[in-house]
Length: 160
Length: 81
Image (cartoon, one colour):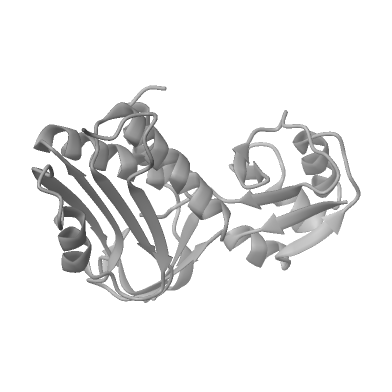
């Protein structure tokens, strides 16, 4: 029986400064659960270029307390919209280097369609609603990253 | 009193991360009060600036009422993920 509105939440949120162990998270989502037919994982990675400048490192700041609440709302909504068997969101804070994973969203469900859609939904809303801020260290000095209008367009696709 | 937090670029430009202010009826009144301080405050809380806010750790708009003991935060548009 998949998760339904009355059941307990199957999602977990972790905010951490340590690197993300992708394989361990994926393994845990399917371990001992033969009803899982699909695990879709999104990894957001740090690039070494942004707006034409070389980026050497990045600092991720967040609003402890609100971050978890904002993500919880997004995951609760995902669980209302789709039958999900497990969701993990792991977001890093602190110092990051190019090629590091900044965020992981992994969704387990019986079939791939729901897992793909829920995964994209979660990352789209995380981008516009979760209180994280990136500061880049570039060849031209330190700078706060500006929000992208494309991100709010991505969120609007999902309706209310 | 109302606890007010500032994050990211706002914290740096305003040179403060948190303060307590006398209670006001809503978020709009608080923003007006902060803008009236002039200088960087007038700039950051001025018209046309894209500043987000939360009340008790939930996203809020300017009509959100405030009560004594609330935690308000102001911050730039978020850039996680």
